[in-house]
Length: 213
Image 1 (tube, rainbow, N blue to C red):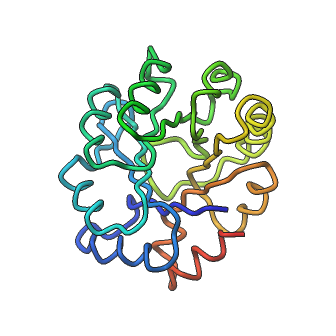
Image 2: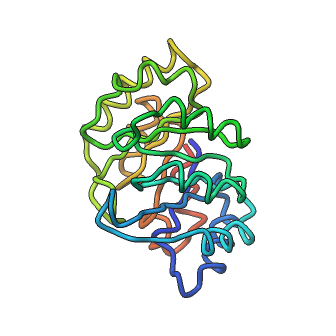
Image 3: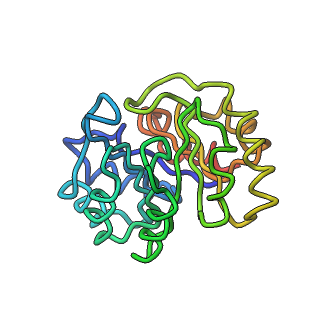
């Protein structure tokens, strides 16, 4: 299991310290939540802060867009060369076109599904994706409780993935901890995003290691 700590739970007064800490503690990706205050009822960070994160991160960036104007934000963050940019299918009228655009920029494209969105909604997009992110909380805020229905949903997605595009990774974001990571792995999940669990733990290295099962 790969681990992508979410910097949404970091101490923004000591952001460089916290980003360096999770990288040194053995994380696999640095998850960056970008919210515009419209698609979700919260406003987070823009390119100036993400650029600062990119400069001090020694692991690849995993940028999760929770925004209304996806194309605008893709173009905004593309110069930082993240490993992944993911966008919500619920907000995008032309997802295949945006997937192609992200890939043309040398970035791996990913789609995000909200808790209520079925995996079947992206059946005809799976072949073109490098990752699918399943939200296991309602997007917009950190520290929420894990929604259990993501486990059967991940199993359904994994079955589709194995048939259509075995190289596509499955990521889960929200309420992940050592109490549910084994169930997620069993369901076919490849990457977990963990914010509060990692940043509130006495040892970030121990927290990350407990998820890398």
